[in-house]
Length: 276
Image 1 (tube, rainbow, N blue to C red):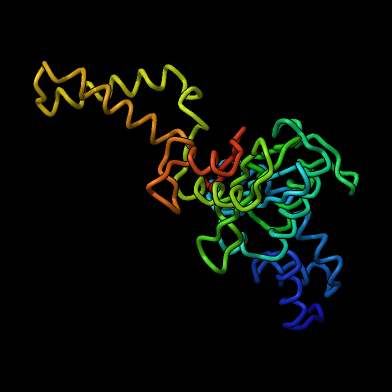
Image 2: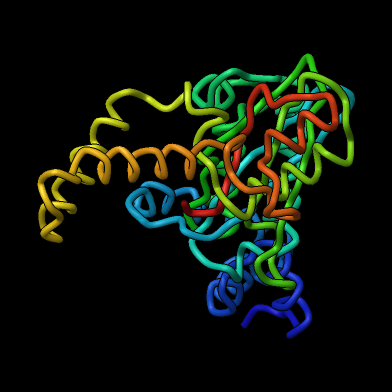
């Protein structure tokens, strides 16, 4: 029987996030050689990557960073919260974020093909994580905002998990405190667009159709239908448009009023919530 200790099993689990039984089997096969056992787990894990393709990745982390006029954010997903809060997963998210900061890729597809300092592509690095962590790991989304000031906010929904919600908001003029406040507002109220002009016409028409069907179902009088429908559509547009929302920290003012008072405006924003 291979010579290894309970501590060896514990160390192997911490290094690979593999199950206890898998670690014992790897150490048996490696005849107690710790480094060889790691290689065995990685090889077996890589063989299992394709089997994990269809699994759901509803856990994970959102990581983000702002330096100067550059803000980057990345959502890295996994299958369980056990892996999400592990040091290796968090370290991988930070490593990918640092690479995104350098690559400044304009799409996820392009980012996955870029080469990291290790000499491996992002996709190859993620595939290795699939193997060593024993779960399906994937980069779901990235965001890069640059060339003007960026506000940032990261929110933990649970103290033992990495941030699950992240926001980057790009301003026309630097206003650090306002940038953070607006980012927090976006995290809480989840607007979809900066202003009403950004709302697609087909989305508004669909909302108008729903409003009409709902009003008729409610038995509203025909003479009042147009007013009721337009009122509901207007309410919808205000709800999804950032600058028309009531500000989270002062409901008597709109987000636009807060921005105007600070002498700035929002150019763009990104809001990520894990698994959403």
